[in-house]
Amino acid sequence: MISELEVVLRLLAAAIIGGLVGLEREVNNRPAGLRTHILVTSGAALIMLVSKYGFLDLGISTDPARLAAQVISGIGFLGAGTIIMHGNMVHGLTTAASLWTSAGIGLAIGAGYYVGAIACSFIMMFTLVILRAVENSIFVRRYNVLHVIAKERVGLIGEIGSVFAKHSLIIKHINMRQKENNDEIFINIEFVLKMTKRTECNRVIEEINEIKDVQSSYWEES
Image (cartoon, rainbow, N blue to C red):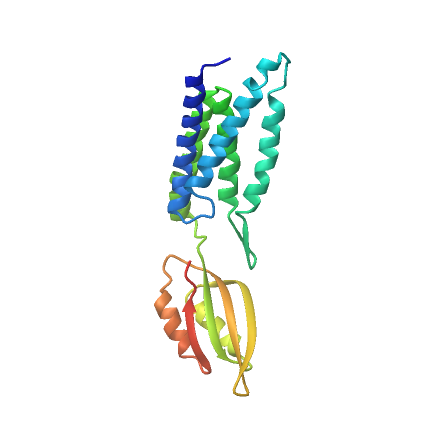
């Protein structure tokens, strides 16, 4: 049996590492942030401690991997709650993966496997922080949502598409809602667009607003 001080140190180590990961997610406005990651890592560490040492006074031998296995499968439900479907785009997969990995780190610390936990923590932070910056500089995967409110007429979508083509914007998804106002039919068109680094968002709005029958257009706040 380990000392009470060792128990506290393991729980604190798990909370600190989880907090570092959660802080990165919090800064980037992700669904699961600082507190969620702290709770996941420290909770997983506690479960591992209970699994290894919580039944020693009963004088029976237990398999410490049994409770750990339940943590790994159970954390999937929490991760699923961070995944959001918007049109044909999926958001939150990285946060779900970070929660799952945080649970594994918590289990490793609870088991006293510090080297593996710390190494995995460095890999995760490198992936979330450094590789994120590298990915953003090399690959263009920025998507924005543009709303256009206009009177319904033939050829409207084609004219808007011409503006997008001029600015090298790719339409990934279109959603339209129709409403009537004073016997006139208006549509709210939602475009999910793949952007480029050179996209002049204000210029796109100006050109779309110049199209006949367009009442207004605006970018959705991210």
